[in-house]
Image (cartoon, rainbow, N blue to C red; front, side, top):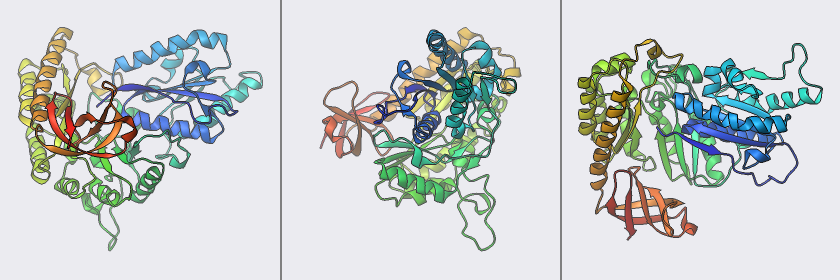
Length: 476
């Protein structure tokens, strides 16, 4: 899982009339996707996108609540806006997303200059909410029953927003959210509270959206879901005589979606984020093997190598089940690569538990690992557990597991040296002039010579060097 901050790029219509909006995005790929939808709704309603907060009439922060550090970064940015808000009282400042869903009134208390707090299932109403705030101000401010600040965190039934209103900003890559929410109850995780229950989207709707994306120039689509391979579990079983899917009781499943997207002309690669071990099936593995466009790389978080810790986390599997799921994947897709998330210092984690995580990391040969120190999140079941692992021990375990992850990644990457790969150039290298970056069919990052003008072209690349994090090669 990667966390990052992304800011709005100015729209081509930035010089046009209409209020200016700027969105700052924190967190995961789902948040980036949501921000694109938000920007599209605003542009569709006559707003224009600008590239800085200083130019904006409306500044929105799309937030993450996975860790405390992510929320504190948002409060820091909000603090920087306080002076500008005093100088420009008509500026609308809004907090969106998971932090808004979790904190609600706390945000107004800690940042009194915030005007708008909007949860994860109300994004489609944002232009109307901002219009309402601006209209109230134009009419003389707050009146009884019409406060000047708005809170909108109730969850409605909207799962998707019309993609045709999204602003396409160029580039080969696009996100496609196939579902919303999570029905699992991992004790450390705030997502079920902030994102709601699972709501999958129909395959026909997703294929239509993917086709629209390809028409805009997208050639690489990343499918998004909190537990992507539980897609379709919330659908009703098909009626007698109706077409049956690969899921439980004939429900549509992720395997069916992959097969439906595979024939789409113009689509070159399909990626997936994030899968859960409990929902790995042989049908899914076979679909990955059969679909040439599907990248052979799966994020499959283990979180801990200790059954004791996994039970306390309520992950729904043990180490042996995880081992069997990986065996299925590697049986059906021999060239598959995997990544894992890890939490160290979870309440009750002993030295022996941690050592089991070290052994599991070495055993499973992950190409990538993302290691996080546990911190309690208000509103989760784990917050009621004693946070009994000292911070110094958490830091030590974090360092040790990161070192083990680096060694495992290097070993996995070095296996590719000498092989030849077909690579789609996705972007110019940020570090090396005259070089391009892409991913192998196994989803491994690779750099190679080439001018920026050839982004979007396919290259045949011989792998010459490997680091724990990326490959590099020469053109064949």
